[in-house]
Length: 225
Length: 384
Image 1: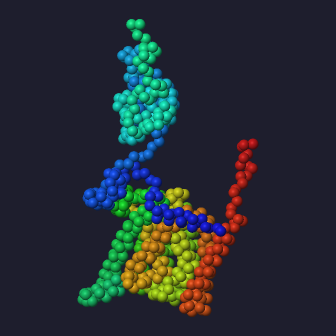
Image 2 (image 1 turned 90 degrees about the vertical axis):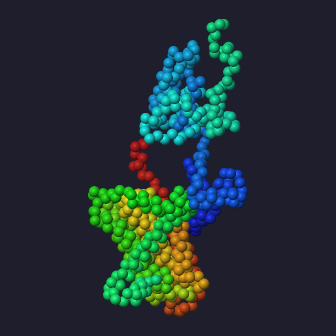
Image 3 (image 1 turned 30 degrees about the vertical axis):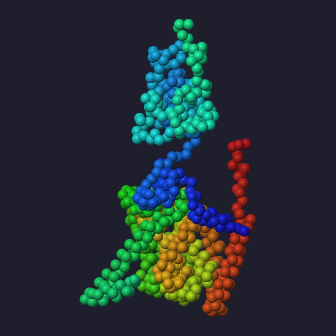
């Protein structure tokens, strides 16, 4: 019969009204906490919590307490806070060459102490203009030494365009939480999540960290030999 | 307390005053009371509607201001008052300003004739039903005023649709009320309530009640008949150019309309304040109105907007025959089955089932479904 769909729709909305917890909204960055949430936060029984904290109960009923909430995020998320490892970067500027917008500016210095037979240059400037970046991730794909990674954070809103440019100091200070984007070596680690702890430079590469012996054999041509 | 009681009370209290001053004083105080009360209810209802609508559609709704977002109407009001009041340069200024005022005034005016207790606030107007129908049809005029005055294509489109729709829905709405008038033998809302003391009219004429409810939803241009505003197509229709307090007035009257419709439906079909006597009548009235409001909200939350041709077709092909059939049935039953309510209920409910089944099958025929448009060969000219 024609028109039965109307009533099907009505039943669905009625279910939404009657059943609890049908909303999928994540209230980022914070959420008005109910008593249930507060008790859950402190891992206590609801009744015990109400008896012990009557003030908090009243406050939460009036909507005065809010708890912070983190947005669930995929580990392959391409965030704004690039994690760049100074120790791994050779200053080859592949990222700058591959950037389709040309917003990465690298100036290197050959006279620094890092210079060893073309092994690496000192980085003087490393500017990324986030205001024009489209987060395609090509710079990360291009990096041959796994020095540049997409980050996981995204709360970098600014009031002025100039502040959107990331420089070396900011990159050095930034939290090193590389995302899985184009980094299978990170994705394959089962217990690794970019939101837990910072990752050191020697564990983000696609190869094992070279031992001292390897280094002697392969990389460092010592003058004493 | 009605106007008459207040008039007599003030006259007794201050007998030295001339009659005209007592009349004006009691009238003004009644008007202020009604307006304040209704606007307060409207403010709470905005919160209720948004919150429950969100719950229906598995969203969150306003929850930042106060407990459960209860202070949201106040925040909205402060925001809208502080907004800049913009009048487009090309607009017809006086009409542009008059439209929201008339809209709100008519919406508030009809409330005074609802008999909440034994008597309506302004006393028993003996043609209240006709008066209410007339006042509510001014809506079409104000919508057209707003759309025409703002010199905006979207606004004019919205108001043209509004006038076409509101005028055509007026007819089945008025005809569906014929049954009520015939049964109660009066146009006064107080008499209509009193004549339902034994049996509410929704049981005696379910077809009329259904027709009236659907026509009333269309009349206040609410989802699924909100072709007039159509946020996604006409960016608000006639409200496009309005900002600040004028927009707030439009919004307020729009939120007041469903409450009035629910109260009117309660009076006409649910027996007003009648019920078991151990609960006071005003609570009966409030709970019935609340129920009807919730049902209207439920419809709004569920059904998508209809196309303009579907809306017009529905008015003339379905509601109009239903209203006429209802009038015919009630007329025949008054003549042949005088006051035998149980038999009338039985016959009418069977007729409603048959009518809905037939209409659904006629309108649902495969022949009537529009075929998918086949692109003409000319459309592909460039490809070949």
